[in-house]
Length: 455
Image (cartoon, rainbow, N blue to C red; front, side, top):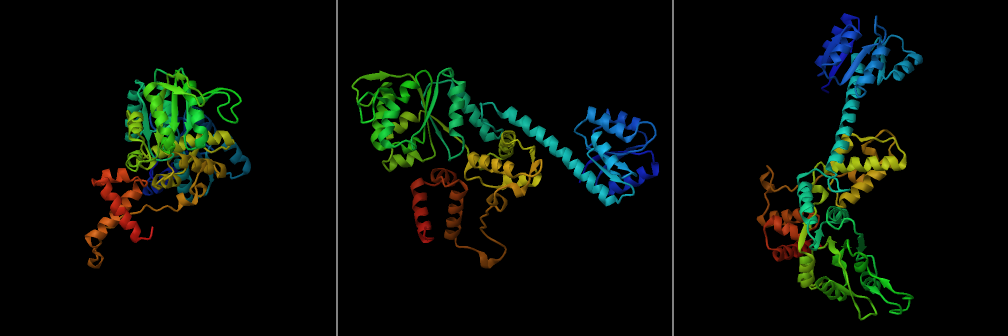
C-alpha cells in the first residue's frame, strides 16, 4: 500500500517511531507535533490520510477533524486516543473522523486502518472521476462511452445526423441500436418531429403491414375505423425499424416501393398517401448473408443501407464497461433507494474481464441485480452474477515447451478459427474479415469443424 500520511501528535518520540515503522511498510509519512502546523501544511500538500492524536495542547484532535472536514472532506482522518470509550468514539465520528484507534496499539493494526482509510479515499476519488467521465461522455443523449471505438461512433452520428438519407445500424443484440437511432434523430434537422420505433419481429406478420402503412375501415374483420400507419405518423420526424432482418419476405417489396416513391397505400385502399419521414433501420443479423440466401431482397438492402453505422460490442470498448456500470449504478441506487455509491476494485476487475455476450443490456441487468443485493455502500464480487464471478478468459495455446504438444498445422487452424468466431460473438462475416479469408471458405470450414464436433 502506497499512501501519503500526515501524522499529528505532540509526542515527538511516538511520531518518530510510527513514521519509521510505516515508512518500512511502504507509506510516505510526514509528521507535525502541533495541529496548527499540520493545518498550515494541508494548504500546500496533499495527503491520503491524516492520523492525529485526540488530546493535544492548543488545537485538539476533534477540532482538527472538524476543520479538515470543512476544507478537505474527502481526506479521511484517523484519531488516536488513550481513552477508548464509546463516548470518545462517537465524538470523533461526529467531528468527521473516518475511524479511531486506541493506545497502546500494534503497528500492524494501525497499518490496516490507514490502508483501509486510504482505499476509502481512493474509492471516492474514483467515483467522482467516473461520474465526471460519464457526464463528459454523454455527447449523444443517453449514449455513454469514451473509448476509441465509441469516439468513432460519435463522429459518424454527427455526420449522419446532418443528412436525411436512410441509415442501417448493425451490431450484436444489446449494443444500443435504438439509443443510437434516437441520438441521430435528436441531433438532426428533424429533431422537433416524432421519433417512432417499431420492432419488426414483435408484431405478427398479418398485422405488420397495417401497422406500417395503415388501414381503412372494413379492410379486415376488426378494422372498425381507419387508422394511419407508422410511416404517415412519422412525417416530419424519424421512423426506426428495429430487427429489420426479421421483416417477412412478402412485405419487403411493399417497403421498398414506399421508400422509393415516398408514398404508402393503406391496407384496403387504392389511394396513395405521401409521407416525409427519415428511415433508420437496425439489425443484429448478417443481411449480406441473408441476401445471398434469398431471405432478404438485395434491392431493399441497398435502399436501407445508404449510410451504414456499425456498433462495437461491449467487449471491444475497454474501460467503457466501468463508465456504463457507474452510470447504471447511480440510476438503480436512486430507483431502489439504496446507499450504493461505487464498485469495489475486485468487482471492477471481474466486470472488465467478462466477455459480455449480451453487451450493454446484460451489463445493465448485472448492475441492477448487484445494487438490489448489495449490503454495503459499494458493489463487491459476491453481488455479481455467478457467471461473471466465475468467468475465466479463454486462451488459444498454439504450442508449449513440451515437444509432444506440437500440433498439426490443420489442428492449429481449426482451434484458431473456432476461437476467433467465438471471440467475435459468433459474427462469421466479421470473423472472415479479421482472418482475411473468403466468407464462403470460412463457412465451409466451420461446417466441417462443427460437424466433427457433433454440433
